Image (tube, rainbow, N blue to C red):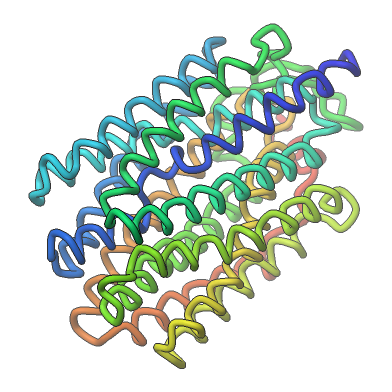
Length: 411
């Protein structure tokens, strides 16, 4: 690979990840606050609505990954997805009843399935496998910096204009993300490398697609899928629940306090992502991922100890460690386990489908537990799920490597 290609694409990739940060996740926890404080929905209805995006994502993730593997118009797919999410989000204040909001969230879920494999594929196709770990760490750092910036703007705008201001902020970020996507030079993307179709060191495998059976024939990949499903079950509902607690105690400052939670975590994620990207090749993937799961478990146990806003925001700082690690390691581990197969992106989609199941169940289950037993019980349940994921990883997951891929697809 031409050594100048990654350098010439550095700024476009940085800009792309920065501006897509606020678009790729849709309204996220801000929707819960808007529905709670402006539309006066109950927690169970909010949980159902948030789950709609997750369920739609479950259906869309694997096809989206397969499509990213197959097509060369990866930038166009990013732009189309950004437009779809933005239009669906801006329509929510116009149609604020249960079923329209659930349908619009489902549209956002389908469109959001495109972002992770597309960004990872474009990155891998430009920088190649040897520089992938460090570049993914940089991607995540700019993604979190973009999230922190958007959250600061959302908090300020919501303070002056009310919770509806986040809708207009998202539209502005979407326009910027489209311009950033177009700034990535299409000619720099090697589409074979982008799908993981490259030689695997030390195993003699030919660089050819190996068939979709590689996804089911690779035990470490299945174990990783189980661990990440539990990670998302434990993590997805935590921030919305914290936002609801803050909004109930401070109705006029709910969105602003939620922004404080997001900014606090995102600012931690930036250095964490850079550190993980710089050290993952030396330290190994497994021990770093174990730290993320342990921190997530700790969050679930700490949140119920106090309703003080400073405590809740302080505990939310730990999310920066866990999410910063996970976001960086996820494509790296899958790249390790699918190297040489040509199915890097469909593997991302398949495992993201499993994550979607965990995330969708998380908000629904947590919402039901809150209604029946209170917020403390919901947080503890989520923390226990993270502990189970940690045990599964430590006991059954080997250190990911390209050699594992060779063993998985050997005849």
